[in-house]
Image (cartoon, rainbow, N blue to C red):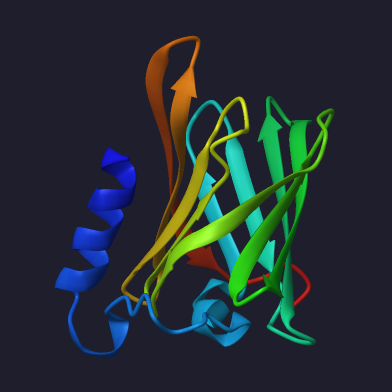
Length: 160
């Protein structure tokens, strides 16, 4: 709940066209700013996330985590319009697919929730300027509140 409120405060305080308009049905074009290639690097791992342009009421994303020069995890994401909301359908490696529904979408941020999921219950993205992206997952696991953040920078897509 606190994360949802924090998202709404951030989105509403952005003002202008980036402000969250809860009464508007969020079409896929509202999150077109995800399109492209993003990377989060540390000495321990590199995470690359690639998003296709909106088309057919959907966007496709894929993520790859590499540790020690080897694939550690991967994920396919189908982001699609569904019943006047956006559905974030995650297919993580080695796990069952899970759908998170949008609870807030603006021109600079998006929050998706599934309170029935074990962890995470929320997935969020916030654009920071044109070349940075903050993504996070949060919720409760084992009775403890947890939040994991991923700070991405825009990169040139491989093969471009």
